[in-house]
Length: 529
Image 1: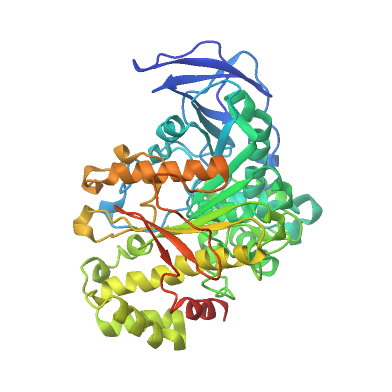
Image 2: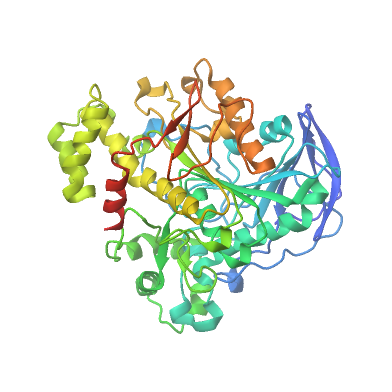
């Protein structure tokens, strides 16, 4: 963490020193910019290095004087992201290039006022498959979301990949009992910080919404099933990352054994494991994962280095065979983008150039859906008669890799008949790259945060800002009331098994009942086989 100081560095002409806020660990001062008070890099936990590695988070070390909270900080060591085409490296704006380290338990706050207005609090959990990413991306800048909707937004950094989810419990006993889940225990610690400090930043600790996209949606899914998180949040939004199941102990113990074997360490040398350089420990992750067998439910089982069903921190699967009763009182919004897999398939030249053949399409879908492939292929051909095999491949794999989990979460939440669930799809297509990406994974993020200005001009088209206004208002309305309905969108009924109403966000928003309902049961059967 940065050292203590009473001196503030020079700031840009359109920013001014914000009022000082007293936290439990010491005073912090941020900046006021565009009518929003911004505090960056506030520690909510101590360093996770050395003896704290693989341990539950600890309170931050207190400081004296006024700590500058004016710059992003806290980026966990990163696993490599999925390969992309070079032209897509910065597809959604600049990426976080801050140094990585185990002193990574920080959060950032945007608030319209340091008063007693008790604004809704929205806590953002970044994406990256529990393995990479940070809360420091410019597209997560929450100035517009906070100012235009009068909400407090807090974005969280925490431990990732092997540092947050190496399950040593079977090897190291009680001392390492929680090691497989310390990354999500960090999130609980951040939410405890929010409960203690929200009012000091103009927010209401009794009205907290957690929201996250991709891996962040998986983090939301995990928190919905964690007893230690109960009562720390009151609403939840899962964007393109619904997680029905996480890894179980047999698999995560096997993974930990493979890590130790790769590093040449014995089970009694866990102190040495805690002392290893970051890079050496991280280098063990990929070869260790290569030793694992195929998951039991490939379309549902999520993440190798991710949350672990350990009977304690995560007592049971969050949405399998049913939604966790722990979150019965939590309203949920869940959904994704129309063509999630377009960006993951982009490195495939045949998909990028739209030269996939019908035979190739059939083989790829059969590899996922087995005996159900012919029925699925016939449906998508009938549904989109003018779409070529490449585009139908994107549609089908979006259904298998994202859609089935989102719908399953919604179905099982609705079946509890306690708090409501709302289902959506963002269908807006980017014009960039000749439209090849369509409505890909992560296209929704700059609409939620109202940060279209940070993405490249190639992604902009008429009407996009109006959609950003609607989407960000809808997210904030849900955070305020627990119901996303507002005057910027059509009437949006909650999701039930009778209607399965789904809001489509596009240039014109509309509600569709049970989209692709003809193949929904078939995808469920494939996913649970």
